[in-house]
Length: 108
Image (cartoon, rainbow, N blue to C red; front, side, top):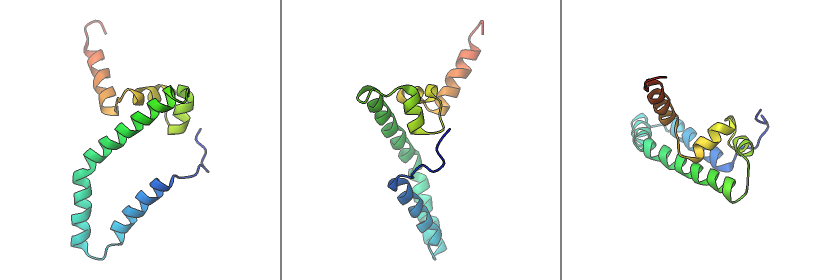
C-alpha cells in the first residue's frame, strides 16, 4: 500500500501550479487557446513521459539492481507485473490489444 504521506516531487507540484495558472487566467479566450494548445501537444507529451519512465525503470532494474516489487513501490499503485510491463514499453492500450489477440486465437 502506498504511503499517503509520501512527499510529492517538486516537478509534480510545478505541473499542478501550471494547471492552476491556466485556471487563474482572466481572459477566457486566451485561456481557451492556451489549454487547447497543451491538449494538442498532449499525445506527444504523454509519449515522452512514458518513454522517460521506461528508461528510468530499466535503469533501476539493471544499474541499481532493484527488484520488480521494489520498482512497483517506487512507481506507486502498480503491481510488480505492471512494473515489468512498463520496462518493456507496454501501455494499457497495447496490453488490452495483446489480450484480445490472444483470446481470439483458435483453441483459447
